[in-house]
Length: 90
Image (tube, rainbow, N blue to C red; front, top):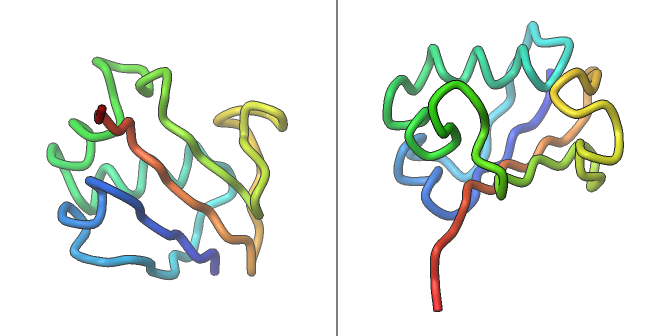
């Protein structure tokens, strides 16, 4: 199982700060599972059409997936994934 931690506008959507999820091998698999679980509200926070918003940050064990293999980054039991949706502010 992996631990997924939600930040900012994802917390009201998931109604959780974190949860454990089983049966995912890549970040892409995880996002697919979360889309199924949380539906359109989750998609609106993370996706611009079919692609992730450019300023979404996904960390696996503290490392940004853009420096690993992007959405193809492999995840394994006991990994920690942090999801940061785009945040507007001033």
